[in-house]
Length: 257
Image 1 (tube, rainbow, N blue to C red):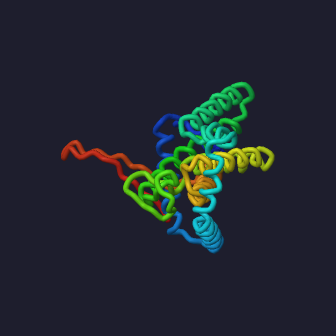
Image 2: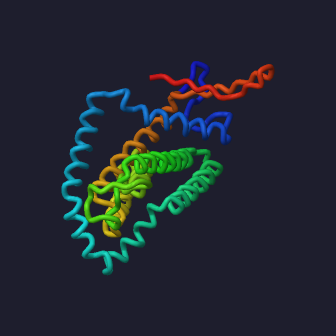
Image 3: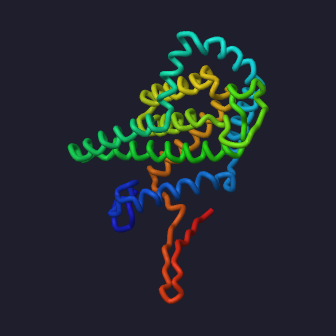
């Protein structure tokens, strides 16, 4: 994308590469995501309806799937699940994103191509937003995990089972990779994310509907981040202000709908 003066507006290719721009991008995309329901489209409503129906269908099967998964909790399949689920742990996945950032920066310095660096930046942002949104929804829904109750409709105060944060994070990253690199890489990434979700069910850390909801949320986050970082559209603006006379300092924000 070019301005009238012919300068590139490609994401991250601006003079201010520091933390200020990074936080502004996060704030911009976070606000865009949480206000998405205020901008309904026919396609969006249909997609949300299909996702809701899928989550509801799995919720009806949660108990049966939990019982079937529990039969493998302590066998070889359960051991595999314990290892696979580590991919969805926030520090592990963030570490992989950092490796991607370093590799992307080396590629940029060697060849001048920013493709891999921009992708790594997008996957890192998608993971951060996935953590924030999944944890926030989790505290709001207060659903008990399969280890805490055999009833999938038991609720308690505190961090809950719905949605799966592991699934949200891995599907957010997988969606960015699929959008940027195509279905060759995307198939591998989605397979890994699906394995993480299945592992969380086998570990009895989540109900099946938690994983489906996390996968859908992760997909939405990853898709939005990847596309917005490709186009770099402004959505949220920060305006710092200071009035020494009244000793008033702060930060104003403006957005558009």
